[in-house]
Length: 239
Image (tube, rainbow, N blue to C red; front, side):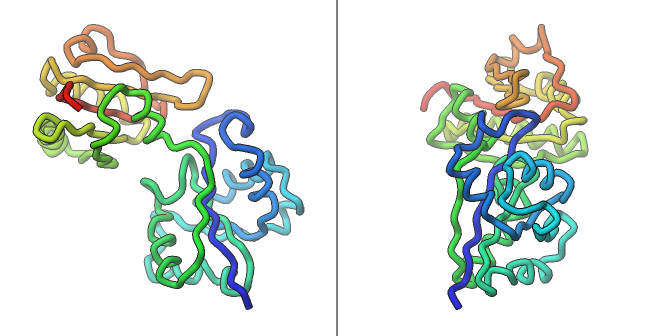
């Protein structure tokens, strides 16, 4: 029996028409799938309803992969592949396996010689980098900074130092409800000449992408509370 393939399916970054962010050929491929691995079934069903799948949602099989899934449970999620079925890995938002629990699944799939098919779609990290005006050739994505204030401040100083030393763009994110506090910490502890790009609500009508120096930001902080945001920091104008 020929094994199935693992399709990596990007999903919307917020409430927007699928046609704005997913090409038609991607939607057609997803519509043909019966098996999915998802973070939250409710969100996945809303997405698949927009895709207009070729079968009733009741006939679609979903398995859950999230931050609570144990590592030794991940391999069994690929069982449909070895029965000859294609399976789709669907992120909660954006591209699966990037800052996403799907990375371990993809790694195991490679170990099992499963064919991986990444599909085209939105990535908040790369959209923000594209629009920042910062170095897009040398960059480092850090995920989340430490929650504790002293460790967070130390991490911010390290980011500035690394950016200046390596001419490297520093990229990080935060839980949306902690965005405003992180922004206030950045403008308080970063050097005035350091530049910060704030990229919020990417791909949505309320999209906001602005790059300014910390000195300039201090006089007019935007309200990014509870808005999905990517932060980019640069302490070098030489690329």
